[in-house]
Image 1 (spheres, rainbow, N blue to C red):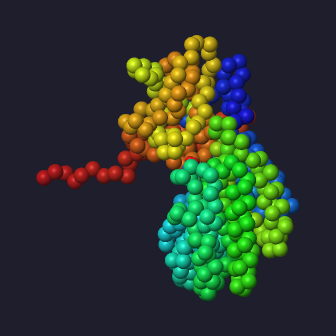
Image 2 (cartoon, rainbow, N blue to C red):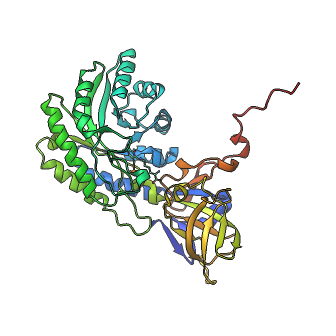
Image 3 (cartoon, rainbow, N blue to C red):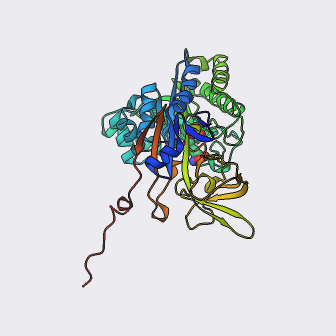
Length: 421
Ligand code: LLP
């Protein structure tokens, strides 16, 4: 998170003091760096130059319209998993022709919306889904562009909740059934087979699992083409990790170059356009969650810093035991104490960080680091807590890109009972 640095012991987001953002927009607030988002995407785009490659951004990581619009302007494609995410891409000025539609449970209305918009490709996960898309395309007089998501049975070496490429996961079509599924797809009149795809997991910190998945896909592609089904593209999904706590994922360029080299050495690989669906690696380290200490609370066994952000704002620690850095917004020389950083929600699982040595006073501000991906998008209104504001920083300017929710909006769709008789 190089965009986040200290000057005179005050933490800045790009050139804006975080204390100023807290005063202006309140807390908790998500803060994103425009430069960091564009740099991360730019590294992929730059590495892909000269290759037929579309780098899609997986919206599920962070679907704020301003974030999407930055990436639209930078030329990215998009990976979506719902009609809601499609609507966001279109609302941000994106082009449906650069959208791939992933997901294991596309509903009829999802598919209709994607057909109407003209998405580039449906990444299909099962035979029944092939039939459903073909039938809906027939009803609207279209041929739907599809790819089949194959489960390559590769261990991405990541947390079980975010590992998706193993046989026991619900995702994709089993490797050994893939050829038959491609034959079925090719036989359905309203489908146009474009490609083959996979996504093996998230927060992957090595190149090897990507190459192992690529090898499996290429081997399968050989058999698919031998059956007379031509493929145009190969989509390797997303999953490149970031550094939360000193992990050292490969450089974006190194990953892409290793993949291009493997493709170039393969008879069929050379002909394929390549696609990716990166989420975390584009926005994860481009965001933080700004929160204020409400209370310092000592128990006989532990010291707690109770802050105004909670598991409803950032679920990753509670759900995955995830580690996020915690930075004091004002550094001070006071004695340091080991704290658990916890929120106000009524659950013991409501913690943001554990055993952190900090010098704190009530009212201090903290930045929860690496919260740009799967932060706001996984937030909820649990405990009737309005969702945080979102701010995009650009040099010395700060733009409110989502207002803090109001309490009234939380129950605006609810109805009182009819009058009692
Ligand atoms: N493509 C597909 C089909 C996916 O399922 C995912 C993520 C991506 C692309 C993007 O993966 P990324 O590049 O961001 O790793 N909530 C979890 C992560 C869940 C990822 C789900 N799929 C977390 O907070 O760690």
